[in-house]
Length: 306
Image: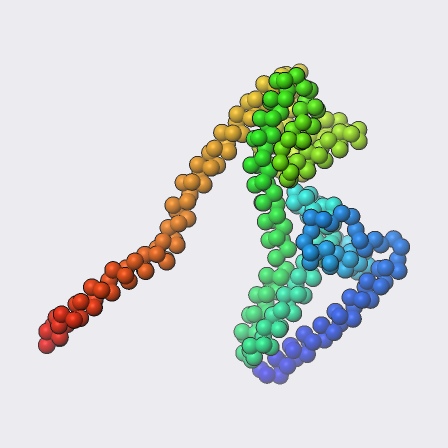
């Protein structure tokens, strides 16, 4: 058993030495090739750690990464697009990030086993295996959480933007001018950035229908998908966009009210477990301890025992 742990320790040390040796070699080799840009595109929306390891991810992707299946790349491209990270992190770099996170978790697990003096092989394998699974899946958890937060932010801001569109168009502005005025007046955030990209697509020569479809694909929210489909249909059939927007705004406000009502109804259920697990036991202790003490002092227990 101890010999196997020794072999595991030697393998971990060897992997650390090899990694520390390969990282500078990868960066130097990639830097010597003019076709590889280690800086990448804009990465302002990445965290500090990702910005620092981005050159290593790009170097690994361009030199050692084998060709990934196009289906996997397309699925990851759509997820990064929905998280507004596609221009900061490519799908291949995200796959490299998974491997880097796996190695980091294994190194952290090995450090824990050494600091705690763990000599039991099943426990060591369980700790290393659990951290390896966590390290490999953590980038996907982080990405899904990023998508969820972004969708929640846009769902809150979209009804206000629709109200602005209705006001602007009833005041006589065309749809394009109303969108521009809405961009200038809504708070800065994910929705404003996506609308700016929509305006950029229009300026580059894309048709409004195609720009709206791209806008809907990037966000992937049912409310905005219905909005873009209704705009495209109104343009094709010659219907009134203003009336359609008014109906859309009314529906979005109703949906927002229903979401708030649903969360309010879920609050008592979510509070039930903390109440039962934390508050009720303390309340029972406060009530029952004086009663038990008085019962013991009364001498009834001794009489009953006799």
